[in-house]
Image (cartoon, rainbow, N blue to C red; front, side, top):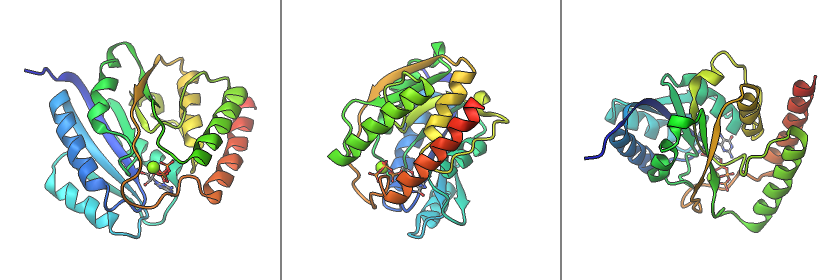
Length: 234
Ligand SMILES: Nc1nc2c(ncn2[C@@H]2O[C@H](COP(=O)(O)OP(=O)(O)OP(=O)(O)O)[C@@H](O)[C@H]2O)c(=O)[nH]1
Ligand SMILES: [Mg+2]
């Protein structure tokens, strides 16, 4: 018999046009959390989708008492969705991953193994399954962040993390785009949080549009990075 950990977990997924992905992801997450922790909820953060993600999320919320659907009427961006996710969670620990299912929620127990001695357990991709130009950009971006902010983490943007909610209570996160990951680590660093890094697997998207590397996303990232840098150095 597997024993459940005596912790409470809110899991959320940012989802922008992920109608074909969130169903399976939500079902798998409900299953795995019900096996491994005492208390949990699952939140689908629909970021102004136009493809039926809203209706699918509502359907999943009706089916499972632990599932909630949260909607942005207008698309805000990855960071906006992550902020709404963090603010909507109610449990002691927050887990999040991407709504496109590029990570395997069956690996959540790998993170849970370390919650006893950590304030945050963050994944790093063992085998990043993205096109070469995205990997090259990610390498340069990561190097820049490490230089600017002095972080030593292996994979800042890995969307597979669990952390104590209390670090983010009353904190006003700013980034609406990808820089939210940098802001996330800056809050942990400021609070001297104990961070454990764990290798996780990454899979290609099987449905929906690839959009994480669009020029709009990249431009916004640089703009928000500059703002965050100035704010932290001020
Ligand atoms: N791109 C994008 N993703 C968003 C947005 N809002 C929420 N998301 C979700 O954020 C997660 C990460 O976005 P992805 O587009 O998968 O980013 P990525 O994995 O870096 O890139 P690809 O999957 O290769 O496009 C997904 O679950 C999206 O559905 C948004 O405005 N733009
Ligand atoms: Mg993706």
